[in-house]
Amino acid sequence: MKKLLMLVALGGLILSCGEKKEEKKDGFEMNRTKKTETTASSSEGVPVDMNNKGVGPVTSMSFDAEIDTEMAARGEAKYNAICTACHMAEQRMIGPALKGVYERRSPEWVMNMILNPDGMLREDPIAKALLKEYNNAIMLNQNLSQEEARDLAEYLRTL
Image 1 (cartoon, rainbow, N blue to C red):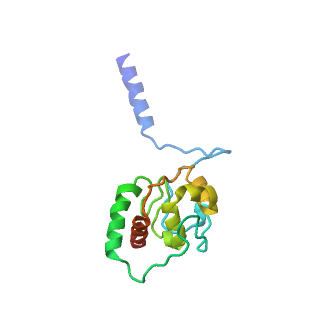
Image 2: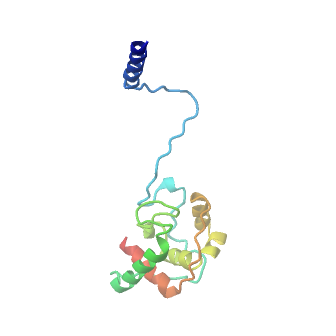
Image 3: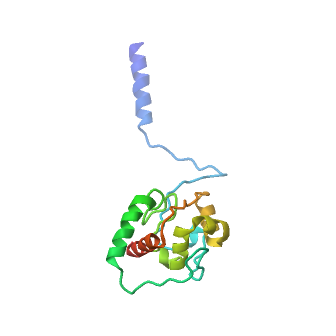
């Protein structure tokens, strides 16, 4: 009897080590893959609109040709303190990846989103689309000054 049980157990072990055959079934299939966002893409589902300046206090803004390193350093410190909970530079998280943001959004739009996320989410079509795209994760108002927001904007240029 022991020999028979040992033989059955050994046979089961040998069969379980065999090659697993994958069956194809007709019908519904769902694959979950992690998406990364590095540049503007149509897969984001949100249009690129460089003419949209957003809703808020910033109506005009331009960058100098060279990055202001002191300003960017202050912006990096602020980014690491408050933004990294929801944003990564090159990977989509709770919020969008921020590398290349100025290829998708105007500087005014970025500044207004930093300074006035509540108003932007209520009135701006791109902010509304992003809200929908990111499962209604609301960007919180960090109550930054325009100078702090400008530092952040300068740092985002370095990503």
